[in-house]
Length: 523
Image (cartoon, rainbow, N blue to C red; front, side, top):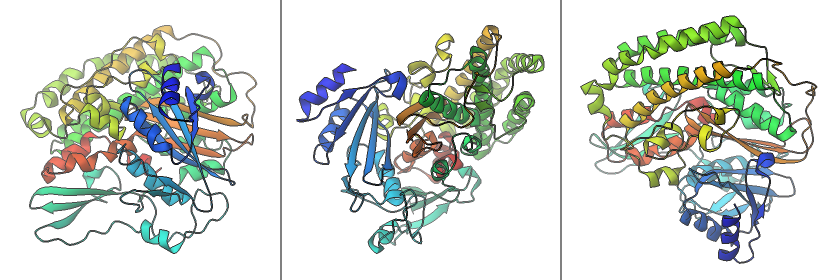
C-alpha cells in the first residue's frame, strides 16, 4: 500500500496520503485534496490502472464532501480521495473525461446535492424530475434554483433528418422492470441509446438517514429482490465492522450457505428470463422448477420466498435445523444432474449461440473505465471475484475457481453464470461439511447500536457483481450517510456504448446479458 502513497506524494505537489487500518475502515489509504489538484490525482490512478469504484457525496452542513473510491481489480488497493466543497455554491471539476463511470455518478450527486461539475457534458437528471423543490439528500431544506431545474429536466429527444426515436420500455418485458431506454434509430440500427431511470425510485439512502440501523434491515431485500441475501449480508457485515461486533463461526457458515443458494436462484432466473427475451420459452419452465426447490429450503429458515431478511447484527434470525441441512443436500445432488439438461437445451443450441456470440463485446479497458462488475466484468477476462480477491466471512476457507471469458460477449456472460452456479454448489458442499456447532448469535449485541464516529466501506460479491456500502457514523443510532454502490447501476452505464451501431434485436440481447435489477438501480 505504501507504494501508491509514495507515488501520489511524488507526482502531486502537496498531496499527503495517509495509510489507514483496512480491517477497521475497508480502505487502505486516505487523501484529502483540492479542486485544482484533483484532476492530476485522478489521472495518476488512471495511469496506474485503477478503476473508479464509487463516487458519492456527504452533507456535513458546514461543507459537502465528495468521496472518490479507487481500487484495482486483482489485488485490492482501495484509496479514498476526499474533496470539500462550499455548500452555498458547490462546484467541482468533472472527472467524466477520465473515467466514463463518473458521467452518471456526477449526475446523481448533482440532482441530490446540487453540486455542479464543471466540464460535464450533460447534467440532466437520472432519477428525479424537474418539479423537485429541494435537494433530497441535503440536511435541511436547500431549494433548487431555477437554472438547476433547467439542467435537471428530463431527456427529451430532438429531431434530425433521416433518424427517428423509439422507446424501449418503460413497460417492455425485456427491460426486466420499469426501465426506459430512448433509442435514436437510423433505420434498424441504433445511433444513440439513452437510459431514463427513476420509475421505481424509492430513496433508500434517504430512508437510511431516518431509521435506526436495525430498522433499515428490511430495506436491503427490497433493492436486489433476486439476490437479497447478498445485500442483507453486505449490510450486516458493514455495521458489524463499524461496531466491532464479532460473529459466531456457525452463523458465518450458515450465511455462506444461504447466500450461495440465493446466488444460484438468481442466476437460474436470469437464464430463464434471458432465453425468453431471445424467444425460447421452454428453459424458463425448467429454471423455475429448480428455483422452487431452493425457495422451499430457504423458506424454512427465513419465512420468505423472495425478499429475505434473515441475517442479524452478530448472527442470524434463527438457527438452521436438520430439515434445512437435509433439504440443502438434496437440492445440491439434484442440481448437479441438471447442468446436462441446460447444456442440451441452451449451451449447444445453434440459434442461441448465433444470437449471443460476438454481441455486446466488452474489452478489459472498457470494463475498467466503466467500473462494470460481476459476470460482466469477468466476461472481459478480468478474474475479479470479491469472494476471492477481497475475501470476507469464511470464503477464504472455500476452494473454488474464478471463471473468465475469452471474448467478453453475451455468450461468455452466459457461460460464466453457469460455471458460477457450479462454484456455488461446491461452496455449499464445503460449508456444510465444515459447519460447526455452537451459538448462532453473538452475546450482548446492543438493541440500539450507536457506532463510534467515523466511516467504513464494505464490499460483497452479489449475483450481479460488486456491492459497496459506505456508512458515515456521527455516534447516533442512525447513520449520517449511507451510500449503496450497486452493480446493476455500474453495469447499465456501459450499455449506450455497446448498443451504438447495433441492430435493435441485438440491443435486447445485450441488455439482457447485463442481468439488470431495476429496483437496485433506482434504489
